[in-house]
Length: 245
Ligand SMILES: Cc1cc2nc3c(=O)[nH]c(=O)nc-3n(C[C@H](O)[C@H](O)[C@H](O)COP(=O)(O)O)c2cc1C
Image 1 (cartoon, helix red, strand yellow):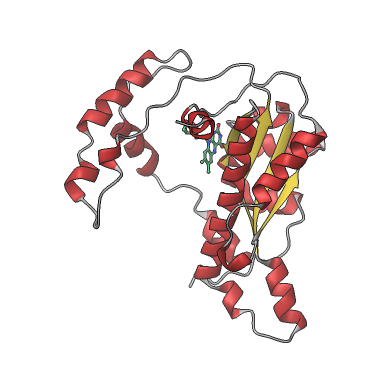
Image 2 (tube, rainbow, N blue to C red; image 1 turned 90 degrees about the vertical axis):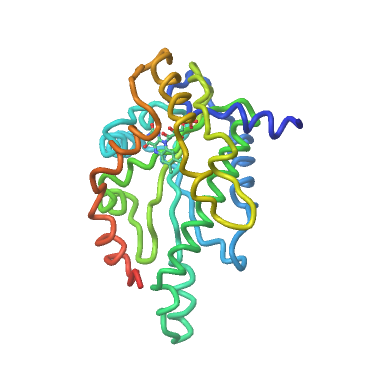
């Protein structure tokens, strides 16, 4: 196994960091890594906003409720799905922006942004840094958009805290390959027989040092998905100009 894959298999989200700063050279490399991911039809439909203002950090951290490390990490980026440039180009050429409004374009920008972020995550971990995605910014997506002055056809998808780890969590056991990988068609039995994996995850949660819990993977997902989360996101997307059609 090469060192890139070894690093990927050692991934755990890091939520506590030392005071050691990330250098500007490291930041440039992280941004370059994010920018060099694959991008649908070369549209590069994302932007990255670094949050250096501590007051703004605090406000964003409060929105997450659960992620105080947004205040504390050396570096915090917000990843924006961004079709505003394309909308400007179309408008400047007196063209309809229907193609920007539609669901396909929203998917494209969401995918491009996620690829960029994961490129950055892999690059950061290869430098010995720790990262954590911050989706809980979407607890108040309207307020995040307001705080960051986001124009139409932009969506703050998630943030990413980056810093030198002061503590690393145990690895969370992923599904066995048989539960996620098949050949030629979706394999209902193989993908959904989760009894063995539930035991593995329950044992992981029971025995982990921080916040032990008595829950299996299925039980955790039941708890997550029995309620609708963030019902205001669809209205926010409409407000940003997307038709959701
Ligand atoms: C899109 C996305 C959003 C996430 N949002 C948060 C978050 O708001 N706060 C947090 O502490 N962790 C967040 N995480 C981290 C996940 O909880 C974590 O990746 C998952 O539990 C697996 O653990 P691991 O990354 O340590 O393997 C997020 C991860 C992803 C991919």
